[in-house]
Length: 275
DNA sequence: CATATGTCCTGAGAGC
DNA sequence: TGCTCTCAGGACATAT
Image: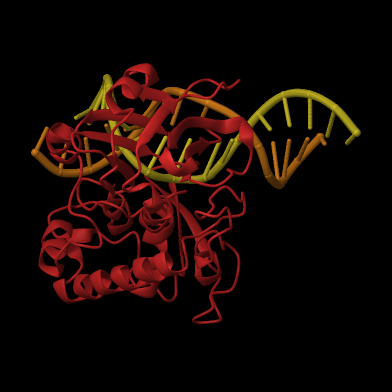
């Protein structure tokens, strides 16, 4: 499940397209139900073909390919993958972009929940950021992080997944950061002290930055890959995610529990995360 | 406004 | 072995 570290890794993987000309944006033939692409690919191609890529940026969990005037927003969601090399299989390539210099970018997505959206860059803020995305998890100040979490009555784990509150953290890293900060995922965000939220903020930065260094987490389904089609390695650092029933590596006495919050799995150690 | 729930999709794995 | 069923969850639309 691509979250901030995985999407950041995808962005870095396609940096070589910066400075290249877009030759063609196309949609390979695919036997699966098409993903949502707006406007239709032919129209996107008409706007972007011949234009030079000036930047690759990340907005929360989205990859953005920018030319002078245009932004193409790729949203991998659950199983999407953006890369220059061969995807895990050729059957689920949803969008293809050919560049000068023989570079070919492919947006691969097995489940097809991902989306592609084109818009003039000048509309990007109003249509994507405003009202939808909070500050990026790598850029938010501790003060803002604390203030936003203290303003919600939801359980801390659920609040961390709210992209409007904080952009970039998803289900896996939310569980991991709460474990490292020793915070009960069920605790109401507003009831956690500012001092503990400050610790959580630092833990979040540490975890996300290490995960980026290790090129993200590749889970048991093997879907996520880095730019050269190798798995990431942060999954080796997981302490609780998908470890229900295993002994907690910290206290060595309690078993990791799985609970469901807001229809999502949460993993935690009931002994180490009691406050 | 804040929060909660339903929906989309495919493939892996469980159970019989 | 081969079938059916359940589940995974990001983000948006809709409901409370």
